[in-house]
Length: 140
Image (cartoon, rainbow, N blue to C red; front, side):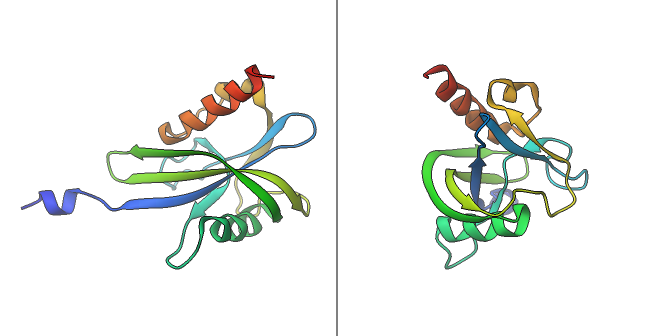
């Protein structure tokens, strides 16, 4: 009867793609002790019970990046099964924000040129986001 326990619940995550006027995207490196530690990611976090995705996105980006999201738009949704957990990434373009973007959780971070995002190692679940962003760039 191990099957019941091996099916892990889906973790719903709000993800923000924050760009700047230079065509760069804000990314941070996961801490070594975190799931997928050492890999790069877009900021965001779990959607808590009773929270909308936008509320979670606003809360997480305030906690992680020191910004207040003023406007956002849906970019993509990614479902991915890792060996130990299933994730549902609800990915949003952050169109407008107030505050100065910085990393508040002790992670390395940088503004990466959108055309060079594929040079960074992201968790598997983030690959479709990277591809989507690079496709967006190629369509301009």
